Image (cartoon, rainbow, N blue to C red; front, side):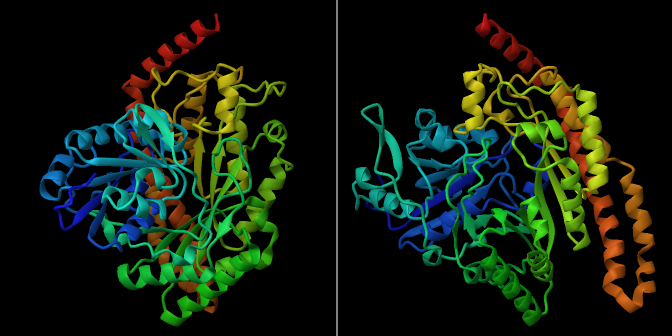
Length: 525
């Protein structure tokens, strides 16, 4: 436990760096994770404690960078020693880096804690044997307060609900803690606690949980909602203190609790008129919400400009196998409905989703690529994300593929490859793992191209043309802005894909894949 002679203690929360080859590195330099900010904001109100967040993916302001990437933790611990270090373990691909940093702090005698639904909670024994002292299970805003009391010697560690730790060499679980339902009692997330970062896109949220029960996700259960007033207060606070203009509402499905969502949008619209500022929002939403014109109108008036939609697949046979009660043409029609309301559509797809036993689709990689390209063109997708299926720990998909002996050993293909850009299991025939990886590069490579750099210049020169629409300047602006923005994003996407492709050409993953396939085949014999 902590020394009782100290007058103040410090908690440092670390968001581990992505692997060098991760295609999300660019956007990560503009934002941060919301969860660590929420937890740090709670600790910041505890007497006798200082708290800071180090986001290794966003070290843009005088950040002490290590030689191998990420932060220089020797420097940090020398100049501002931490007594307790917490780790954000919600992204599987960052886990090797998390364990590496945890080892450094353990050698310094620092208490280490970690949490994260998509990995740590599903691999508790592994985490506790990898330099983590305590694993927080579930939401941490309440648990962290009691953990700190225990570290100060004011609480029995065994009485702290919602944690796991080693006792006499065995994993010990304390009673579970109920999910938070009263969000109004929590402090407003304070992004000033994120040191060295330059944040342009601010994550905010109102709803936790999702009732869709997708087999590739661990987020389950009934959604729990904070009041619209609380979310508006978060946005108001960020505008007033950070001059924030761009926001990402992290709710899994924007539009749950429809009436409250519309009320929030109307409140947000009125607030922007009151302060004379136009804000920009991106949300994740279901495709079928396009059938609700009242909701869409309220969203547009509130400044929600971009909708991120999980189309999953444009292949009719796959949609039927997934029990999706919609056809590709129906999805195209709904995408057009979003466009008619003025939204930019970010399309999210999964290539080569593993089907259940008895459901077979005999499509070659080239035919699949063609169907993706045709759909993307017809649906007029503005920005695109095509990833491979990832059997994350704790998901039904992982259990299913593991029972079928199709998952490559993590000794051959480690957790750092679990980001959707690399095949980590044996796909359905006739697809091969190599074809899956090449296919997503071909799809996104056609969409994001170098030539769009020239289109950006042409559209900038054409900007004065909007004044031909003086009778409706907003219509002129929309007609110019969307192609300019899309060209800029497509050129930027080309730069990211180019960097990712350069990493692949080094051949490190190819060697690992061959070894993993040989191991899997030997196990089947």
